[in-house]
Image 1 (cartoon, rainbow, N blue to C red):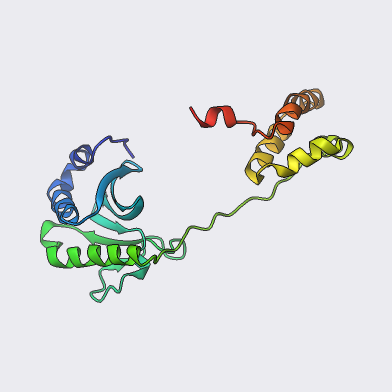
Image 2 (tube, one colour):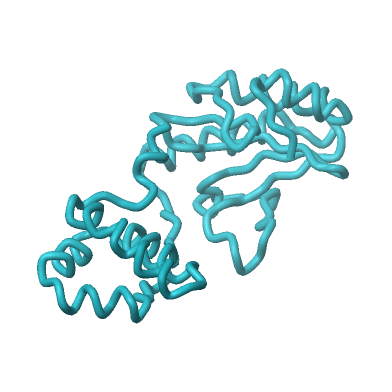
Length: 199
């Protein structure tokens, strides 16, 4: 997907649905939602929470309702784009401007806003991978109580970064030099890539 820097650019890039996207945008912008751009697509938020998004594909354009699972959908307009995978997200598709019923779309958007205000939300569950400590690091941790304690206070993500860093070294000597390099970092409670995260 092409990176875009404004809603106008998104519509321009998807010119085959420009009329439909503009119409949908106008409907959403008549509400209290704040227009922004996320994942290079128009997204409409309430207090920083994603409510609805615009999307354009080859054969249809759509509205994404981020917590669409809670919408009553009396008119059966919503689909789960990834059955079995998507829990909260629902999509309303259109092929032509004639498919867009302004009053219905507005009613669905307003219901989504009401649901958000009521706190109806499914939060994504992150699947965390287990931390697999390489044997070379395990030996050092078991002989250095302070280092082991420092390692255990790190988040699982930071622990994984260090373990993968050691594990990726092919030679034993490289593994040992990497362990020496990361020891003071672990004792300081910092992650391997922390210095890059605020760039």
